[in-house]
Length: 188
Image (cartoon, rainbow, N blue to C red):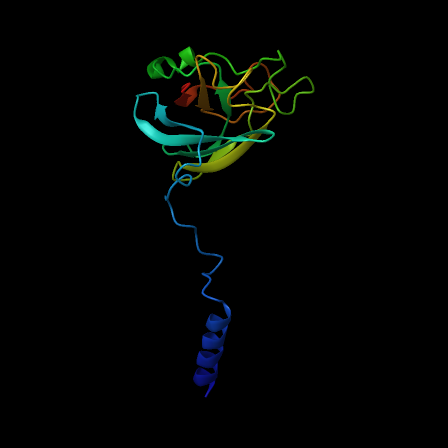
């Protein structure tokens, strides 16, 4: 009798769930980073050896720039990420130095937590899980993709991921360390 009652309760609960999966289940890995036609710009992330390790998609928003990223092969933990001045990832073994410094048209100090900051290229840290993967959506208020002062100017811009966490205050890069991945977002 107890087995019959348990079975009826289980069936009733399943019927009430409306076809929803268990919220404890993990979301499926992969899938498109954004719907077709969503992005105003996109670029592949490469590592220091030149291997493709992910992608970035960027969309203009009314009060800033929204971008999504999917990157694999990072060390587990927090990583600094910034917009850099030039869409040039051609020198990976040398640390992506050709991408220049952080985007900073207002000559502000580095860091989201610095009282004289942030630079336009400063972004919140991202976290790579045990599998080395990051999938994130980040909004940068006040940034523009195109037009006067836009990120995608004549030489474009790069999205750089660093080896370490950015403390969001220390100059010049918050202790974020080496540049380990780069996505060059070129002008149209």
